[in-house]
Structure formats: C-alpha cells, structure tokens
Length: 144
Image (cartoon, rainbow, N blue to C red; front, side, top):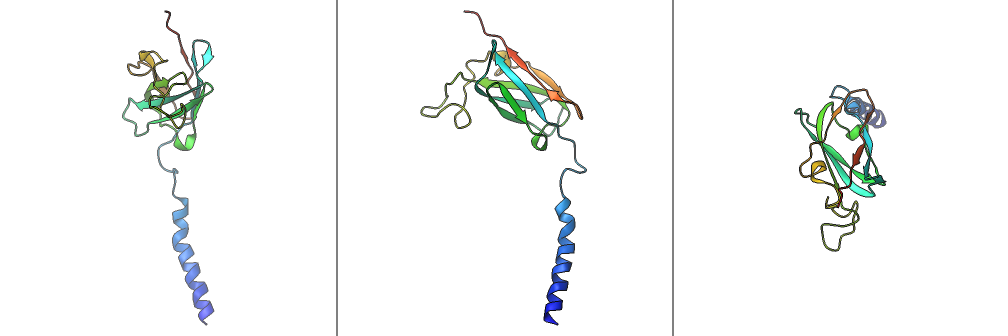
C-alpha cells in the first residue's frame, strides 16, 4: 500500500510541475537574430565589439564580439523590432587596460574606429520581425 501512495504522490507532483516546463517566449515579443560584417578600410576588423542601443523604447539592447570581421547575436538573445543606434569599438590589437590581452578578455579601446562609429555614433539600423537582419559596416580609414 505504501508503494502505491508514493507512486500517486509522484504522479500528482509531476502533473503540477508539468505546465511550468513550457514557460518561454511563446506569448512574448519576438526576438530577431542580428548578423553582419565590419571592415576598416578594406580589411575585416580582427577583434572588437558592436553594441545596439534601442531608439524606439524597445526593452532589448545587446551587443556581440566582432571576430575576424563578423558578429552575430543569436535569436534567443536577439533584438526586438525597432531602430537601434550602433556603436562599434575596435582597438587594432591594443587593450585599454595594462596587462590585459585584446579581445574577449580585454577591453578594446575604439581608437582605430572614427568617432562617428563609436563615441559620436550616427549609425542607426532598423531591426524587422521575420526578415534577415544583416547589417554590414564599411568604416573608412582616415587619410593622414
């Protein structure tokens, strides 16, 4: 008899917890994958960071590492539809902190990238639901 009570108790517990397993993004706002390429002059940026800052009151903001000229924000962490200001930092292999290597463990400084692509960015993109959101940036080298 004790064994039957345990089995019934386990089944009831499983039935109560079952609906919780489906919690997710089913009824929430859609997120979108964002990808692209970033070049400086004609060369891909080796390492850097790209950030997307919401301009239409969206609750999503995100960024990604630029590796060998490419970046990707996967759909599960992606951006909701709307306009975003884009800020790009790349340090040309230099780190802003002494002793830290560039890339994912260090902070890239952004000295390589002109201010209109980072500290004074005027770059704005529009993320759209259900469409490929690929944004490529060709940053010109300054003469001199």
